[in-house]
Image (cartoon, rainbow, N blue to C red):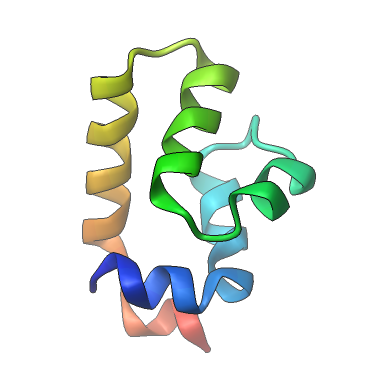
Length: 71
């Protein structure tokens, strides 16, 4: 799975993002609108982690993405 697929299907994957990062609000996810850099920034903001940690979490989450997310 690549980020273009996640971004293109953002509405379907917001639930998965909320499962992973429960502190993110619906408003946060609406603002992000599938943009990876914006999501990393929101993770940093809500969880108080460094940029590299947010990127690490995003990479792992992206790796877990599967076609079942888009149904």
